[in-house]
Every structure is written in C-alpha cells, then in structure tokens.
Image 1 (spheres, rainbow, N blue to C red):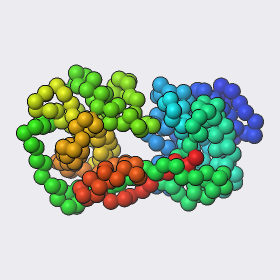
Image 2: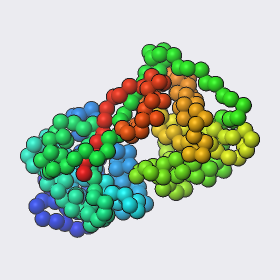
Image 3: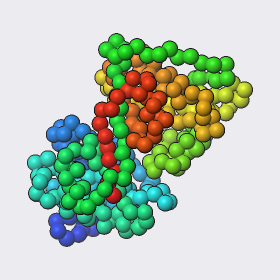
Image 4: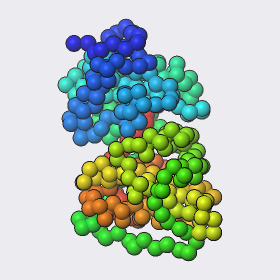
Length: 308
C-alpha cells in the first residue's frame, strides 16, 4: 500500500512534500517506532521527530516512499541542510534507503546549495555505515552519547561546592528567558542546531510536558545578580533515564569551573529524584567538555555520525 501523498509527487515511487497529511504523519511515526523497536536506537533526532508534526520555524521538506521517510531541514546561514531518514525494518536491504537518500540529497541541495548537505546516522549502525560507503559519503561530524549511572547503583557524586562569586538558583519564569537566550546564543554561536535560538525555542521547551522549572539551573555573578553566567537544563525521560539536556556557559565567564558546577547541580537534582541513569550528548571534538564529563564518571554509550 503506498504512503499517503503530500502536496506534490515525484517519480520512482517517491513523494516530496512541503507539508504532511495526517495520514502521512501517522505513517512516519509508525516507521520511527518500528525502527526504534528493531534497533534499540531512535532513528531520528528530537528536532526531526518534531518536524513530522509541523513543529519548526525552518524550511522543511519531506521525502517518503511506501518503505521509508526522510526530512530535510534547512540550516542557518552558512550551515548545511540536514537530512534524517528511516526505512521500515521489514523492507531493508532492498535499495529503499539508497533511493530515499539520493532524492533527499537532491532536495537538500535545492533548500541550501552551499555548504553541501549532510545526513545523520543515529547509532551509526552497520547498515548505515555500508549505505554511506555505497553513496560515497564521508564522516563529517560525530556526536557522542555518554551515560552515567546515578547513586545508589552508580558511584557517589562529588559534592556541590559554590564559591562566593557565584549565585545558583533555578528558573523563576519568563523574566529569565532573555538572559538564557543571550547566553545560549553566545555559547553555541558555532553550533548548527543549538545556536541562533529565538524566544520560540525557549517557549516551546518550557511548554513541553517534560519541563520542570526545578531542573533548570542558573548561575549568576554575585556582584551583578542580573547577569547570567551559565545554565544547565535537565530533562527526565522516565524514572530510569534523565538527561543533561543543555549546559551553556557565557564565553566571557569561561575558566571559572561553571560547566562542572552546573552539570553537578543537575546531576544531584536527578539523583534526588531517584533517576537511575543520566545521558548527555557532546561533540566528538569538544575535548574540554569530554574531559569534564569523563571526570564526572560518564562513559561512551553510543555515537551519531553526520555524513556528507
């Protein structure tokens, strides 16, 4: 049975759409669930899953066949368009993934001609590695997933020690948003997904079901209590797994140990909630962050690779 059609079609059994019908949305979500069950890895990122439901202020194109789905998200100025794709586990190794990606790359070049588009392989599974090789793609970016069991199963956490220059508190409402936005965009001006946020990105997350104001930690300068130095946004997926969702430090405040302090504050919070384990994502070439997290007991769990 062919997938529900979008706004315009292509040949070779593929459909390209600017928007998805409700039937196509259901089709894409079913593929994501099936692949997650088969592989133990979610095939699409949080952002890519969200755009299935139309949640994005970026240019998005959807590509699908009766065996797979991909979306193309335009990058910020000077950044590549990003492709994420999933194929029905029961239909793999029959050329569906290759056809889907060839079409998605063509669409991505129309969306953002320069620099060249990239495709994420979540978990970097053997099938994805083989497909990338067939398409002549090379590894361009690595995103590591690290994990750490929390007490009592894991090692005890170091104590949280504040110096007299820093005030630590949790989120108090929209009045904090402007400073969070400023620090986020300063800390991640280089980052394709995390940089360039607007108020919409903060509002979307604050309104999410998982949001907990007591899990968003803010570090301020004691001498200038309105000046945010950094923040740590935690997330709880379920009682067994929490996340170091975002740790951002103002570049002007680097060198004060704020990344470690904020990370520890969030870990103690998650441990107090009796969360079993915590995960985080970090760029594979971010040596300083990796050093901090490894010293806090995190080890490598999985890897996502962007091919281009």
